[in-house]
Image (cartoon, rainbow, N blue to C red; front, top):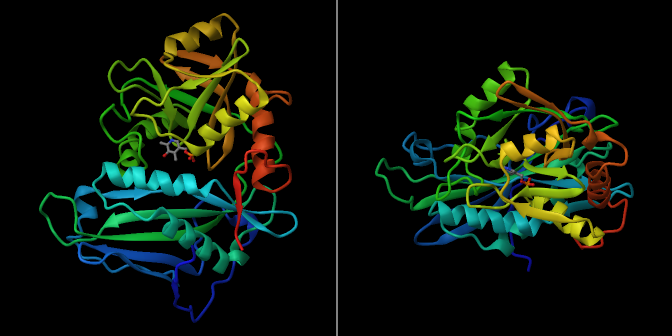
Length: 357
Ligand SMILES: *Cc1c(COP(=O)(O)O)cnc(C)c1O
């Protein structure tokens, strides 16, 4: 279904940044998608308009009570110049899951998916083609109603902005060092840990600073009640290969259900590699490590796709994990296959990519 989206032309186009200086989320393209909601009209006036600052009331509810949800996905440039999205319908469905939890009115998933495709089509020239680079797509919804009363807002804006992003890795997967946080917690069951909402990130910054002070790059969260069971990493889900078997924490209501996580599970099943969703404690991980059975640890997420973990710091214990960045590791095989599919370099047996045209 192709809805009519108004296109408001930009007078001037920006100069595109050099591919080496892209980084993550620093540059934005010429256009954005916007759609508004009010109770009377529902979601209305979908438009592609020049990327520009917003005008909002200081009393806009998002600033006070944090009704804000977002998504993150990428458009990839293939060798023969096509542009592919990876499972975008999953992101749009998850956006609705997030809306539902925060009492934000549901979106029409087909309309938003179509809007993403049309926006990327308009901005096709912004999809970089250097290996590892992509066009990051950030859909989000904020409560715009002017009110200090605590209630679900009656007015919202849905927007999609685009940012060309650089390569996460150089030629090789680079292992990350991760700190197991046992004081601060990210989420509890019944809360909002399973959705992509801005507040989860605000709440995570303190632990991230603490990890960095200790020389680590990211945080591994434990469950919010016993601070014992593994949940996930900052913006990645986590997998362990223990004694030949791949395991990942089961989605329990406080973990974000990553689309990369889901793809990894599907792919392993497709390959016939045993994979289990389990409840696993940090003690069990350490136990496996001590027995020499902790073969690989890796994170999964849209940003890095697969991120091998080279070191886990927990209290005063340091676990050095050699496996995930090895040539013949599961992590490496997953990385090569997933990026191969995303870049149209190899067969897409599970039909995950969608061409923008
Ligand atoms: C987005 C996100 C992930 C990864 O999800 P993907 O869909 O694989 O990108 C994992 N954890 C958190 C907290 C996230 O916000």
